[in-house]
Image 1: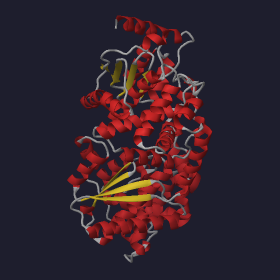
Image 2 (image 1 turned 135 degrees about the vertical axis):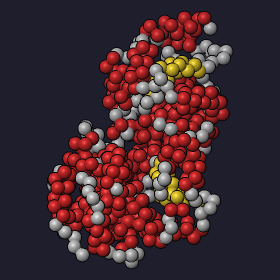
Image 3 (image 1 turned 30 degrees about the vertical axis):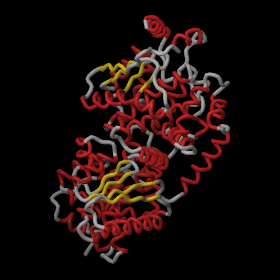
Image 4 (image 1 turned 30 degrees about the horizontal axis):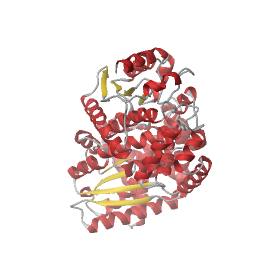
Length: 557
């Protein structure tokens, strides 16, 4: 043990790794034999950097405690050495950990901290987790992130330090770490593994410019920093490639082959040879198969699955399924595009039942599930849609709301991320789809509804302005101050005006323009530019002209 500590201290002086397998100098093999000695009782030591939330500490501790059990159960092996895990309370604390314990430069630490949720140095047996990252928002995500980073330590040990940039396949290193993290979360209260798989696929279907699989082979430090930008969706692509590979085998065989791949890295000439030896096919053969399959997936209509919880009648379940199917057909006819991916619609019987469903299906704590569900009719968590059918009190309401719901899912898939959207326009499109479905079912016409919306504005003390409604927060705050009925009516009339002049195709072109500019900064400018590119004017200018039209009674009785 003393010899191990002495070697560890020396390695820290040599300079820390970036992620699992970031290689040291050529002198490194001289010391590998010392690190191959197994500790008698390896453990995971958690250190807090800055102020860490009790929830984050609790979930990281649980993940660290259960990780060795998962490794033994799934791979029949685990950590040979103790690991120091630094849990940072903020991005600044995380940046400090990267500088102090991984010896990244100030610039590198700042760049990495801005885009990563965790960092692992196999050769120094040290892991850091950014407690403020988006991948730490829920209990299940915190467990999965911890499992991800700890599996990088296992990768390093299995390969005896050979999981370096020039040898290991980046996509399989990161994808398998996410896979193990998903297994850990599934085992201890997080989202089910099958939901993780569907979420990954749906994220990529919504991505406007996902990175090409061939670009995720061997990446050096600079290349890794570059592809970690969220808009590249590199980790989702790595996850999908890993999942598609592992599902070729039964779970036990897949896990054994995965472990064997990392072991083979030590003896093979490169990652390609290790891959072929472990999985029984060449990397080129696999990539050709994967790319062909993925192209087909992008052309397929969505698979909609239903889970009907206790208290929901068979009649209601059948009516929901019928309305969803008709809403999909409406979207296909008017947008000329299919909703893609795979979704599970969970029919819950009450608000409390929705909370319980969120607890079991979305990997949330009870507090998170209640905040997530709120008083909503429906909420979306990746590929899972939770629907409170108790709020669907009559046929007319059901038709409208399910049409609007499916339109919101469609818009989210084609704009990529919520921050890309103009909140008022995304909602306006959804309202028009719901209204269109009512018209199909014989409940009035769009002309009738426009008159009703204008009447609501006539009764309002003040009208909102569209720039106030650009973001979800702005939309909700304005609805609270001006009144939700007024804001909804103004949004519906704005969307109807665009529909009249640009048609449904204009809405779809806007979705793609918003997705294409999604990585631009600042976000507000990107949203305005996407609108202008399709509709020929700035949202503020459109708002001004709309107010003139409405005030002069453009839509009369």
